[in-house]
Length: 125
Image (cartoon, rainbow, N blue to C red; front, side, top):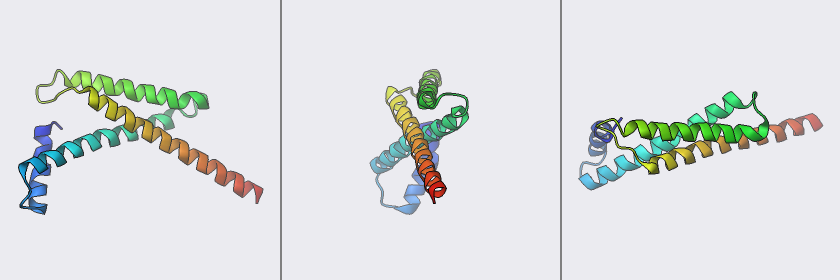
């Protein structure tokens, strides 16, 4: 899903939605959507890694291990993109990916803490 491929979808949709939209605005929206996709897919990856590792590792190491795996995957993905003609590798994308993974992991942590409080409240009632 290089920029030239996503522009086939985003550009026509934006022109349909707002026919007077400028080419610069389309490029800005496309850039934002692409970066949001990076963030979101790595948030999901972080959550899935947390889920996969939570029963086999100590509680303290699950977050670190899942984050490290996601970050290494982000680095390897960008490295791979450096060899694909229609793609560009960017250290900024690695940072966005890592932030997404961290948010996914923090979301899992918050949910676990909330579930623990709820279970304790139900148990004490």
